[in-house]
Amino acid sequence: MAATSPLVPTGTAATTAAIATFFGLATAAPAAADEQHRVQPGDTVSHLAHRYGSTIPAIVAANDLDSRATIYVGTTVTVPSHSSKKRTSTVTTLAATYTVKSGDTLSAIAQRHGTTVAALARDNKLANASLIFPGQRLTIGGSGTAESTTSSTKRTASSTTRTSATYTVEAGDTLSGIAHRHGTTVSAIAKANSLANASFIRIGQRLSIPGAAKATPTAKKQTTSTSTTKKTSERTVYTVKSGDTLSAIAQRHGTTVAALARENTLANASLIRVGQRLSVPGEASKPLVGDTFAGRTYASDIVKAANLNKAKLLTRTVPSRDKMQAIIVATAREHGVDPALAQAVSYQESGFDMRAVSPANAVGVMQVIPTSGEWASDMAGRRLDLLDPRDNVLAGILILRALNRTFDKVDDAIAGYYQGAAAVLDHGYHSDTVGYVASVKALMGRFR
Image 1 (spheres, rainbow, N blue to C red):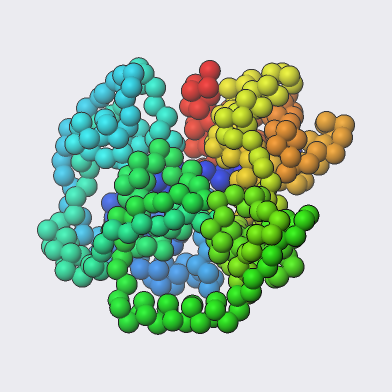
Image 2: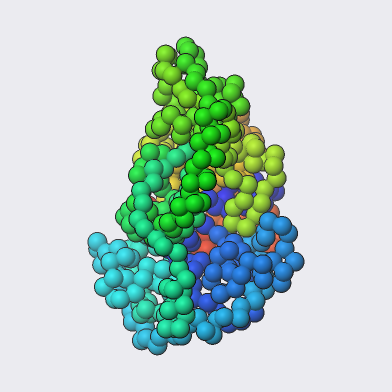
């Protein structure tokens, strides 16, 4: 979620949906027919259809959804489900309690007790399954729900032929997008590549894709032929001149930085040299930032601004995550804000990634939206540039300081950063805000 002023309510944190998807929190066993589901961050109609054994058309019809099947966090949707009883049977297990020891990871604990990371995270209400600490007591519920033999046999018989593949991460990619494209899941890719945090992937990284759907030869041939013909006919070559930047070249040729970086296999979009020959695709690439996140679809002008900011950040050299963390600590101490709180909020929002931009145009390591940046600029006594790493940190720290002064409890200050102080004062916590506050407080313990 973008940092907010007391009068500006905002959307959701950039990491919340990724965490929920990574640890399987949106893929629980199907529930009873005609379930009433309260929409959580990261939920989509396709996820709900899979979770409850329903279909996208059935959910759309039951709730009179628009053509995009848009659902909103906090609302309740009806999920018609007529196959639930056939699909599931419950395995009765005895719950146990485990005390976390130094060096433990949730995956190791899950393997040791014959359960899964997703089940542990769900049973213990862990907003971030990578954050456990020595002495913490975890409920071990066993293997949970298993599918009936009838359902498993049927699904196996009708499943798509799958194989392993390798994919190289491109600018603008997310793990959920890669998983969807290859017909697999975020958790499967994360496990296959030993990713501690599914939101941290980098351009040029090679990922092993387990269980990738194998396309039929005919479809693949048609797609390849069409794509190749179009690119061959529209591709041009440009020679880099003194003073050129990739963003300027992209703008001049009606394409994007991401498309140029992908077309020329550029690991760092800010590193081009005079005389370098670049292949310039004529067709525009997919946007760097989408228009929908956690059930909310944002206005086109906001998404356009977000994409412009993302493109600018991709052309700039920014500090590493470790250096950004050090800047956050120093700035927090300078302005009387608890460094653990500042680090926890930043990690929750962006994972200390200065290039992070959300569909709501929340920018940078502290995920500050422009209106909140103006508020922070007033407090700083000068114009803050949210694309500048130090200014971005300062904006977030000043907002946290103001929220600490507004509220008596740190929980409310954290909620205000996520939800907007005015909304917290007027309506209390939204359902997703509760999880956000819990996650940030857990992170504070890590950064003490």
